[in-house]
Image (cartoon, rainbow, N blue to C red):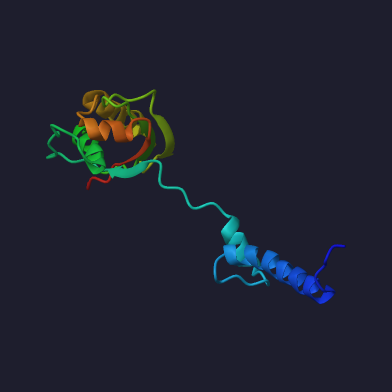
Length: 171
């Protein structure tokens, strides 16, 4: 005949196993676990983290004394290089026009595809639109390919740049 442990011992062992099985998922979670969930906290845990910026945004103003850069090694120098090449029309005074372009560069500094205009503000004199947009296009023709360093070219190839051209010259 087989000897079985007393029935009280079975109950104690079963209770111990149930407590251990229930406690192991709780132990695996962080120490701040609360069986009562805050709905806002739960939603925050489910949301993905914010993405890193995928592109760079800069404003270009007309400058007569800007010198072209020999090497472009920093993102801010990309905007400085385009600013040095931009020669708005020599019409008298402030036109108040703005043009925003989205441009992507290749590793070697060439423009990848045509620039895309995303915003235009006519300013005070709408008749100057043609000359203004032509001067912006000529800035890219004059400057590109930009003289990127190997490191910068590899880092920004294919990433969008937003150039905001603003004619704010005094009258």
